[in-house]
Image (cartoon, rainbow, N blue to C red; front, top):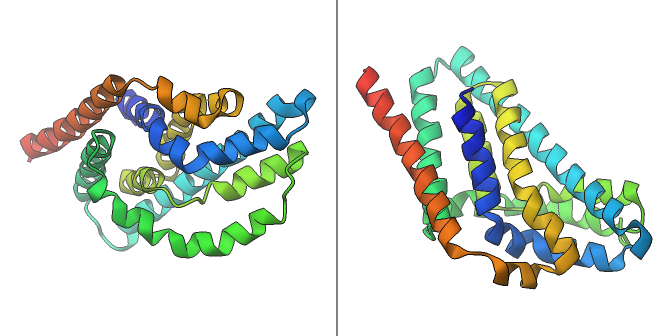
Length: 220
């Protein structure tokens, strides 16, 4: 997979941090407050490790399904490539403040989350690393249009390995915001965010997607 694609995945995860803080920032802040002060850093790291592992595993599954689609259903690789770049455009527009293209994906995940969320409640209070890891694994399924769009892109890549790498890069991009939220609080971090960076990232990601579509069109 081109390096530029991995960079775009990490950039989407990082610059989508305002949204991540809205969805997960309160959870991370609560984990930090409930954890023993001496073990707070380990609790936060274990939680985020679990969340990132879920993203990578889901990326592997999504990429494998895309591969099966090309081999068993005869879906043209060019079609998946076009879909991947369309989703890049959608996520770029999301970062620019136009979430309507990814909202349906977020709404579709609520049915699954209703089954997962009660299990995570049984792990409260999260006062050990093993519990934090388990909660992170489960909260990786939290309905999030940005995550689901990234997973759809992993599917469109048509490879289990590329799908897991894409989601791994995306997960790494989300880490700085959520780790800092555990220390300074989600609300404080949101106030520190520079909206200009989010706009720049949105324009770059959108531009990458458009470039991929133009490149595909010129190759035909």
